[in-house]
Image 1: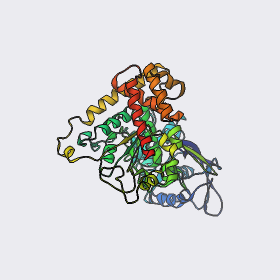
Image 2: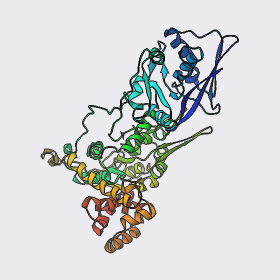
Image 3: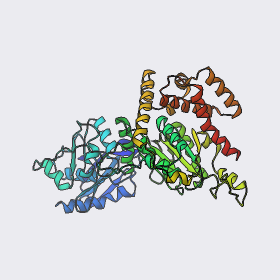
Length: 509
């Protein structure tokens, strides 16, 4: 007789069903595990054996075969421990043979029989709910699984003994409750920034329309300080966004205590990050920084210090909103719709163009440093802003009275206008101006006659690409939303073009 237990394998954020088939047959004692399993899965044999002995059970002196079907699907991770152990217990009669029917099982076993948390419980729970299954998982992952559906049956146990007692009727495991992260640290406030009014304005525009932003300026001008305060003016995650972000975090194993957070992700990788760390991949494919920043912010400080190949790998996710990892034996796609915010010095010494500064390398210092950034990548950044050094006068002045809360209210109002506009046009899946393209952009951002004339002249003089032309329109539409204007006017386009002209000045330098 073959005992079957349902579990999952992960492809990106998708949980594919896997059938764990267990046979205990006469023959020489052996424990064989087949089905294209990696080393972590093969090592489950010893963890399962030790956990069963610690729970008062011993494997029979018979031939045990465990097959993970489909056999051509790679199996990775330690979450196969619990389905194998429970399947063996059902096969030898320690629990009823039909106790696991209608359940998807995942969890890692410690040698003493305790259940350790594993990655990917949330997408596994959503997949189980879609198939009409319940879920059996470690207690630490229960609050995470409870977000999948209020009607999903969940057994979240701390040890194997608790599951045995539950199936025997000696104990009842309560259904866990979904949890949000409590007591999150306060975000840095814009009121801390002195001076830099233009940079604060650019940060507000970027937040309102989810535009990509690049700060260029000397060391100590406050570029990183400004970028770190962007999350404080962004609206919290909506329900659908919260689920998307949490599924990626679950697969990556970064959810703490199974509790979700409504705060938008803010990822700031070091400039030594590899391409696999940035876009995902590796021996066991994992989400990269671009996916962990999905529906949030990816901040790249010291932008030219990143490897050029790593920076150019961002071009495709910036356009498509997906990070596609293709290998010889598998292909995985992770969501990666992030907002890029970057900061850089104008040259290696950091003071090119500053009054009274003469670089000993001359103009080549700035030219060589900025040449590390490709034109196609810069073309995908909507707002380019030169951030001057803060003067001593600015530092001794009182701090600004406008806090992040006041700016966040304007950003939320602008985003509400955009979402309502997209719903009226039959596109409820879009929420910000940065996502509009093609005919939809023409419908929402057609300028008036004066604006059209200005844009035509600017496109010719600045030699805007088609992408640059459309990105100017998107920024202008956001400026109109912040001003409460129905149509895009000449003033909105002039300001949007000014942010684009900064890139031309840097290239000319």
